[in-house]
Picture (tube, helix red, strand yellow):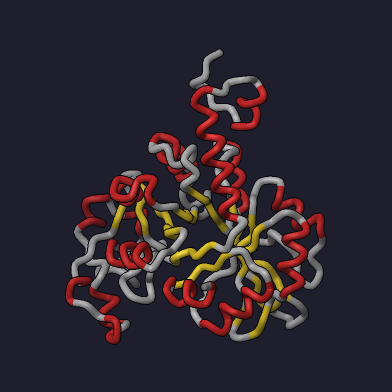
Length: 308
């Protein structure tokens, strides 16, 4: 058999291809077991303390004991996977325009740190000025399998080649078989593409609930689920067909959009619940009481303190 053709792990084990795959199975099973415990997910790194998606933010998150570093991905004009949240440069760099309209060389010349000092003078540090935008390759080269990555993909219509480029990178660096990565997206299509490329990667479906314009109930941004008040087991099962978890917002303009019953129903359908982005200790404790399995936060030290 040509084992260079990728098989889902369970299929390969069933066929008796057990040599290097035994260790892979152990690592993947360990990751899934670890996900059953509470996970502290550093939202864009420790982005409450340092410029998001820069080395200082990631280093602080590691020092604070985060379980996962969250990375958002876009692509440069020359096809490099860039770590930045917005699809435009204006908010977090001294550049302008869309990420995808600039080459790697142009993006690396930008200052991705000074904005933070201006926006957050209480956390300002002269060392942040001039911080570079990072590529996914740079982050992996620095941390390897010493950290776990929680990577968000953007819409396939914006970057149709992103999913394949990402999976190929993760596979080449051994991050799937080492149980080092989770992929999340608001785009169901993106996640299903990733699942088709590598069924071993744990996936999390992001959802964002907001009031309908007529004021009658809630809508989900991309239509993945109905109003949480009307969500059924079948809706959760549709997500469980390709994902291990769901990542909801908790509030919209200060009003709850999910509650403890949402978490309970997700759990009953085999899904983890990782809400975003929780920075207030009282809110953290409330969600812990609901039984969530992890949270995204800009302040990993706060969440660690509440959890412990």
